[in-house]
Length: 64
Picture 1: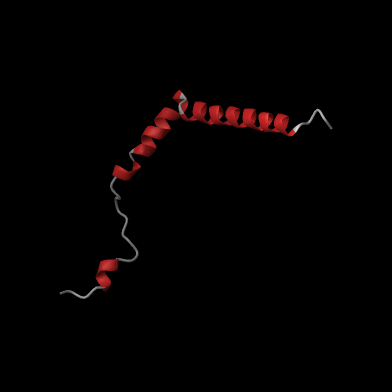
Picture 2: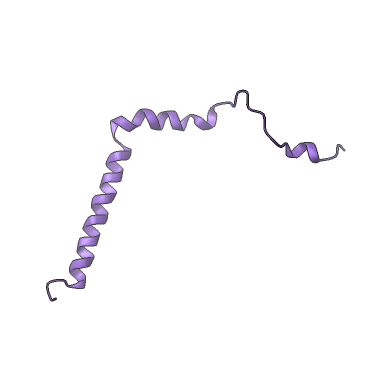
């Protein structure tokens, strides 16, 4: 099994990781995903409307 040297395996794994990384980068920066990412980026700034918290931690404290 001389043809399957450990360095050959390492090289193949490195190539697969690089291809996978470039695939993720291409997916993240594609034009088709831009609208979704812009919408998700605004989620922290949206106000909750009509939602009442189930438990208010401040209500358990005694007034000073």
